[in-house]
Image 1 (cartoon, helix red, strand yellow):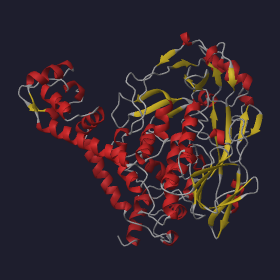
Image 2 (cartoon, rainbow, N blue to C red):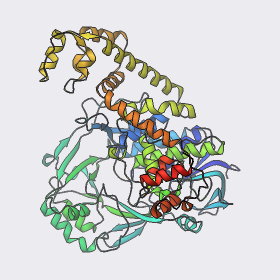
Image 3 (cartoon, helix red, strand yellow):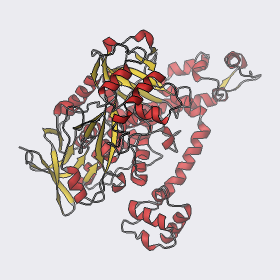
Image 4 (cartoon, rainbow, N blue to C red):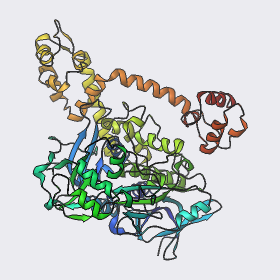
Length: 622
């Protein structure tokens, strides 16, 4: 039925699996994507949205490297917002509401158009391992399929268990069976496993809601997009809405706590701290009288609504009663109740930075199997696993992004170095170099790397070069061109600033925090330069950010350079950390468990002190 041997087998067709299969195949590897249901490739199991705080930066990074999540989102979104515009550009984060059905359909189209991707519908129940190296997989039908590498992207399916009140259903997603066999084999092979939980809210019939009692949440007036290449511009948008819970809603929910699997001990695994269930919110924040509920349409044509903020595993009757007490939901018809799901994961400290496991050669983990939560976090891991599986097969150097290069680098380093005991979600606060890792410059940071790999196209590289050239030309012009008082003062004074008495360089005006470069567009000389040099909006915005935040950017670049020096101090694979008795006992134990590959990574391990790092440097002859 199959090729004699595949280069890469990807197990699971979610966001991680889709990016992994596409990356490996586009780089030239013969790839097989095995999933339990081919109709559900890249399904949005939870909210119908991509991006958000820090997550939007990840999607743009995936796109800059040559992945597809941004392209698919642009083709299928129904609303776009740039979040945090009232803050600095390091915090700006794109977010889009997606058409759930079109999103999955577009991903399926892209994968089917990728020449090196084959598909097979079946459940993978085990791995074929020879001499501590994976050589293929076995399926529920008893088939053995050979491969040079395997990427596991099982999502919430590994021994998945669904909870609704006191009811329990085996499943990786509502209506779909769990995946069995893999966890048990991996534990037998020496892996450590754990359990996590996540949840999803009820879905309701939008025709049964009273929007007059809610607050409208429209998209941006001039919506942007995710991909740096040409994708459709959003010309029409669907509104979202917002309403609130109340003390009455909370009281109804509390009535069901004795039958809540989270409170009666049925669920003992850890859920996402930053996306808690509604019952968890009213328990942890008992002093709050209300919580926000966002009403999000699931697509252009469907009437199905996602009730964001009402994730729950309470009995379905309690869910319905409480939901219908929320303003606008009095007559709500429920399509399906919310539920919690428990699933197996493998602490990611068992991985290398390539996402290859330390225990079994050529076996890679990506997505929720590593303890993360979110489509974006899963997708970027899939992309990196697909790239590195291909590179290893072809005996090429691994592709590893550093913390100062990408949010993807921060995410993977956090997982590998620190591990996680709760579902990991990316935030801008996790990145110490977030001024460098902005969503607007992801192409300049990463497309040259993607192009060198052979993943990003020549078209992408040309666009980056053109954008960089235009940006630098505009910056140079603004720095070298003077502006007269009668041109500058009306703009300065209208923003509450003090006017100038003589001509000054234009960049001195741009650097004022209250002045936007857009306001200087009507200055004759600048306007002429923009027209003659065809400066587009992207280059214009880049120039403003680089001018305004030049000092902060330079400081972070200097700090990143210091970190880079430590990244180059390598630690041998067979280094005996337990033999250095001058290092604290906790430090030795943590170092031996994580086995860092560089001094920089060692310094980021919780429990390893600066003095431990100094001693380690001495033993390395530095």
